[in-house]
Length: 172
Image 1: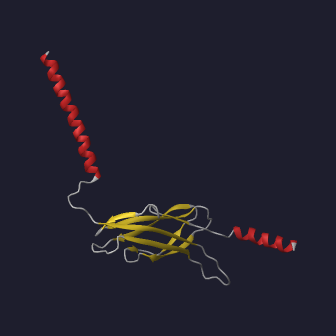
Image 2: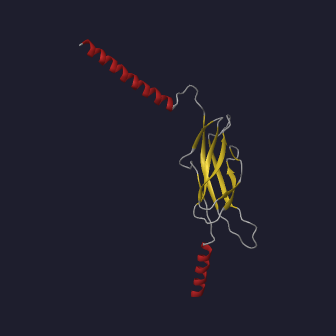
Image 3: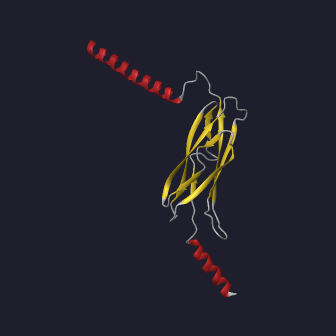
């Protein structure tokens, strides 16, 4: 019995050295959806990472959900060992006449195994987030314009105040 436990632990320890893993990060997730106007196209970047691996990893991306609004220019990528900056651009296009306002995008990333004789194990990661399609409201002032108008009004008020005070001092 002790020999079996020892043998199992030895195999596990030896396998740890050949295990490779990767990570995927996104600027959007379940609680932080992408909001995009109907009729608009936007490119967002996913980030593949291989910071703990000692060997380059080849992965294949597959769109599982949202294929009607998202596209990938490539579906196979090499993640260099020790890197965290392999960028995967996703092009998201929302048709003007889209019926659903909420769509889910889900992409699976799986390691590509070389032709091996015997058993080969790979790893996989998924990334998913919601896309909320909004109708653009014509004539609405955007937030940056509102802030600029507010700052301009304050500056003009300060200038006007200085002019009035200088005239009062000149009269005395």
